[in-house]
Image 1 (cartoon, rainbow, N blue to C red):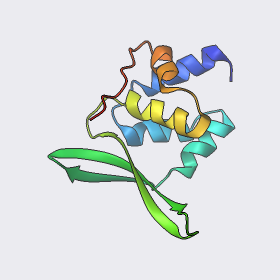
Image 2 (cartoon, helix red, strand yellow):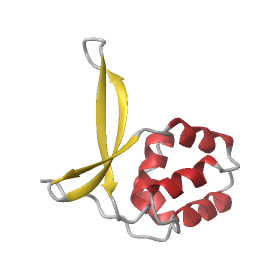
Image 3 (tube, helix red, strand yellow):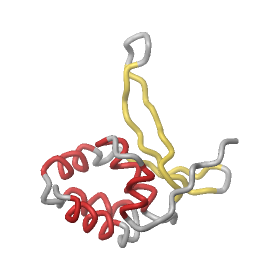
Image 4 (tube, rainbow, N blue to C red):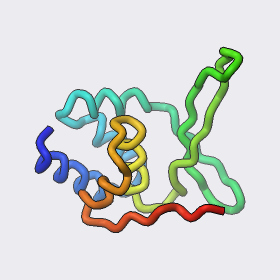
Length: 116
């Protein structure tokens, strides 16, 4: 995918309202690698209310040190957050593109998450 096409894709994804819409758009992407990566994530997201926030988690099975399958949940974003968070997570997790680069492509400012 050429840089111009990639920029157009990122900007169009950021116009979506929520994670399911972004995931559907990624599945429909002309780039086969992106579409397959999005398809592989189907059914792996869960919404949980924690500390008064509706959080969206990516839930997957991974092998632990003992070789046993274990459920792993990664907090992606809160319900209602700007979808750029999911777009940046997707391209980092699937293609190792830095989140900062995705934000720049979308014309947004990336802020490093604060450590607690």
